[in-house]
Length: 128
Image (cartoon, rainbow, N blue to C red):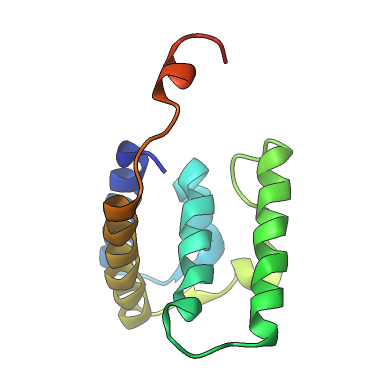
């Protein structure tokens, strides 16, 4: 993920946490607001359970299927992931949004430490 996209995601997550203090915010509404960074938010949410040192067994298969589905939707060119109606209707309370923001920002900071942009010349040379 590019630094600019990462910063936009962090700002938007903080805005969600502030907004949910005023009114309920459904997961679907948040995804619609995020546009292209919605995939990053879903990836962060899917990764959170795997940051613990305990093996999660069959949950890893389900997460793999979810990642594959997200990848398929990206390949099809969807700007925002298509989610089932039940998931879109889920409303997180203020405490859960703040927790998601806190952990999500830490994950993004950690990712920034261990990753770097690759193939810069190919991306910006006009070949693609």
